[in-house]
Amino acid sequence: MGRRPAPTAIKLAKGERRPSRVNYDEPEMAPPSSLSAPKDLEGVGLEEWNEQIERLVERGVLTDGDLRAFEDYCRALTRLRVYEAQAKDAGPELAIAKGYEGAAIKYRAQVNQLRQQCGLTPSSRGSVKAAKGQGAAKADPAARYLNAIPGGKSA
Image (cartoon, rainbow, N blue to C red):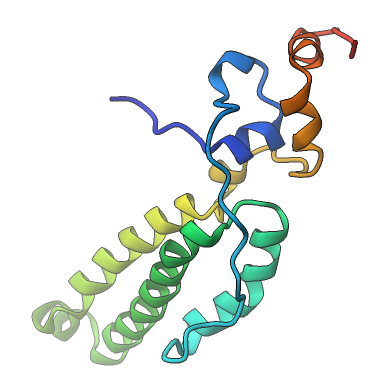
């Protein structure tokens, strides 16, 4: 068990100090063909989509294969806000009795999990500097090795 491994793009952007932990042969997925939101996405989820999509694609965190997870995150965020509003309007006792509070708690957990997968939390993007220049690190194993050593210089 243990921590789930970070995607290769994140490891390279952070500057992984142990190159043996990076899968340089990981298949690269194409960027999304369209950045437009799904037609039935609405509310807070649509706002989040419009705010984050370009940034995530630009940094190489969101690919065509990740688009569905990002869509699920946006939909779950919309539902979370709906249940939070219903719970607030109903009051504490009625919100618990009608299940609004329980639904909000479950959606909050799902949203937080999907946020991590999409690189939208401080811990998931933790020291990411830039996603550019990945090709150079992939191409030259000697430079990769020397850069991984503290104080090492590029060959």
